[in-house]
Length: 107
Image (cartoon, rainbow, N blue to C red; front, side):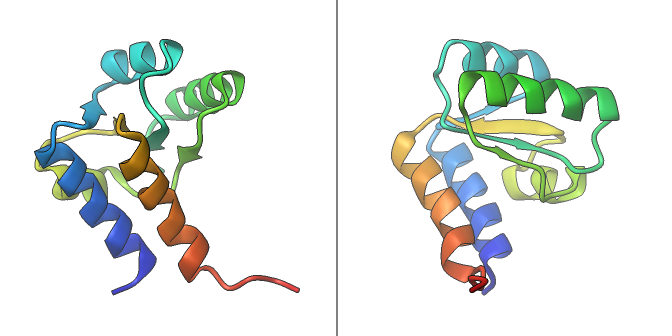
């Protein structure tokens, strides 16, 4: 199983554990209040949405993932969503660790 599938599985697990915030307004509010630890925005979201979340996440110092499409995110969590964020620190750390483990390091 590759790291992308592991990350999508983690989104599903976070959803079932009620540690996932989804939807534009809820994610934006949670980021501003530092209630989430990683934001996942669909790569096929509108340019305005992506630019807004890139700026917001940089300002609030929260990691942003733009890897997955709306279909990938929606399939993983069982709801049609373009944006979601993980609110549990441990789950967010695990989500981010999959990418670091599986990516080859350039030397």
